Image (cartoon, rainbow, N blue to C red):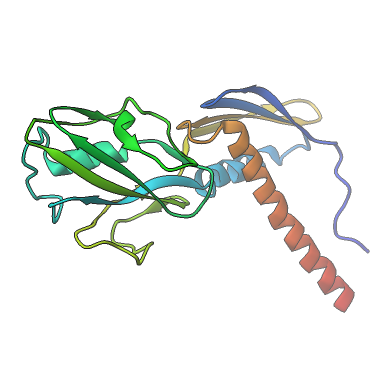
Length: 232
């Protein structure tokens, strides 16, 4: 005797709209009374399991900590670090990577001035970082790492740290907004998702990742259940 019945409908996922930052996805048809449960589950997965990239530490030559003065920089170091955290970064691998700034003043420093190795890309190169005068020689190394969710600066992700490296709080999630609308019909339901990202990953890839994550988990659970049935 099996505990799993065949579903009433052959459910499909339709892409209503998708670009680099916004996407709408329709899951239909669904059996009555399961749309809300499925919607909450997928929303939580999108917000909680999609990997992303963030700056986890910064080395600024001749600077010991974030409260040190930097001669020739218009901003305080802490404001400079805050601007660095606004950078949107994508990588084609999940290992740590280092990007850098080597700039002599005077001038305005933006994301365009960041030197990236192969496979690393700044999504918002026009992001303002700081202004330096003719006395400044800006030498900065930024460590980029992959992760999920939020990582406080107090957590050591990489043990190979430089002396005087400043640790940063890292927000890895590329998802900026997720909502869904449940549509009720006489014999079935539909789920319409709106997914918004920061541009480092497309909404379609994020949605596909969450669905595959959910599918793999249920496949694992199903195999465990079947194995227990065989043992009994």
